[in-house]
Length: 396
Image (cartoon, rainbow, N blue to C red; front, side, top):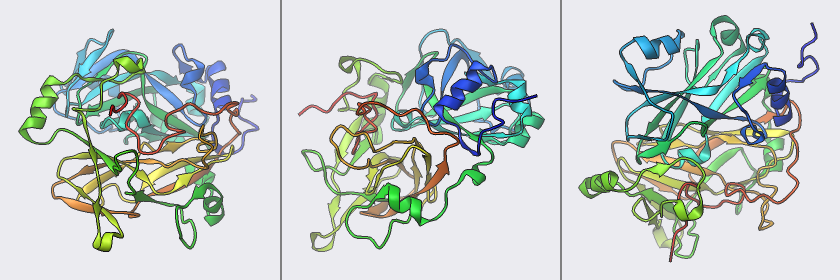
């Protein structure tokens, strides 16, 4: 029997290939639209089935996960036909609209890796994909999927800082599919780094590592945004301010950043030559990279924290970067910086300007995705230091 993928080469699946898999029913996606299929990943939309975890998150353990949710006593079903509010530091699980057909699972050629969408991570919401039958979060291997998978997908969601609103059909996470193992799709060596990474100032060579920029920017020369929730006053704010809706809204309906975020200036170092930023216990920060990234058609990137728990803080980035990122800016600048999300742990610490925080992993595309025809209006293609698109603009 001739399969759709007999002539495909190992690599990240493009939007064209994913649409072919959906059209041939290898991927079962309820009412998928063109906006669900990004250039190198699938947006995972929520189905109208949800559970609240009663004792916190339970790591996947290779069993029938839906049976566990309904029979274990560790979760309770909740109504999810309409928008619902998710409380901070409470874990919820949602069934997803995507499923894997039996022939897809039996192919033993497909691997998957998921990450939260950038707009969701910047609201300090943790998302983790659960593929039924797997024993780890955020992905699957071809061997596991063929041996243990049922094809059902779920998403674990935990708001940390802000109460949020969710509703059926919105996407909080993305899944990247690989034809072949991710390791076989890696592009290694400094040549690809030199051609895609734009380094600010002097450096011997681009090494695939992203460093922190604390250079002041915007009108009031800030270097970071910090979630405004500290102390007793912060707890009062959490209970009185509106939850953040995690879907696209008109600008007038978005919450203003004031009351949710503070604009932070970095400290000057010795002889005013450097910048430093104290990271306070339990606080959530948004920062940006010093380098800019510019990708060609045949390359996708995963931005991996050099260590998720560096010292007394946690570094995160909603890690998928799609082909053509940084090539389509409206301001004609070459390359776009990436955004870091940082949370302080038990003790205060200090970050320095150009401190290394993440490493880029480059992957070959299995096929070039369809090229965007116009200059992008995406806030992330044109970003510098930016909040999530779910917040309105700063005033004055």
